Length: 304
Image (cartoon, rainbow, N blue to C red; front, top):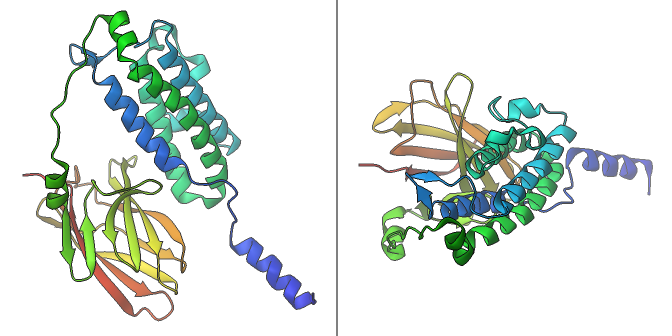
C-alpha cells in the first residue's frame, strides 16, 4: 500500500467514528415508560407506592440501573450533580427517607433524559452511553418482572390494579397519519424502536421526535433525529413554524451525511411555554449546491 493510500485510510478513520456498541437508548426510553405504566396501576391517593415488593426489589433494580448510567457519565468526565439537575443524590448516597420507588424512578428518568443531551451533542460518547443503556435495560426488565407480578403485589399491598380503558388503535392510526404528496406524516403513535417517534417517513428521509427538553433560560428544545436516505449530504432546516396558531421562528438547521443519521434540537423562543398544535415545514437541501430537494410538513401534539 502506497503512502498516499495509507494517508487516505488514516484520514477516513479519523473522520468517521466506527461504533462498536449497538444503539440501546430507544429501548431504555420504552422500558421506562412501561415501568411507569405498570406502577400506575397501583396507587394510594393518586400517588405511586413507596415500594411494590416486600423485599423492595423494585427499588433495588432501579438503583442498580442508576449506578450503571452514573458510571458512564463519570467516565465521560461529566458532573453527576449537574446531570441530576442538582435535585437528586447519587444512588449510593440516597438518604433513607428517599429510598422509595417514586424517588428512584424520577432520579433515573432525569439522569437518562439529561444523558440524551450528551448523546445528541457528542458522537464519541455513543458507545459508552449505549453500553450503559444496555445494562440499564437488563435492570429495568427485572423491575418489569416485579411490577408484573400482580399476585405478589396484591398480597403485599392489599390493593387491586386500576383498569384502564382500551384505546381503539385503528382510530388512533387514522387520526394521526396524514399524506401530503409522497410523504407520510405521523404523530407520536408511529414508533421506531431505536430512534424515537416517527414524524416524517418516506423513501428519502426519516425524521424522529426523540423528546422535549428545556434549557436553563426555560426555552424549549424539540430533540430530533434525522436519517438521510439520499446518496448525497443534505441540510434540513425548518420554516413556517407555528405553535398553537402563533407563528414562531425556532432555530433548527442540521447537516446529515449520505446514508447516515444525526441528532439536533429545534430551539424555540422563551415566549413558547409548551409545544401544542405544532405545525412545521422541513426543507431538505443539497449540502453542496444548496438546491432544495424536498419539502414536507408536520402537524403534531394536537390539542383542542
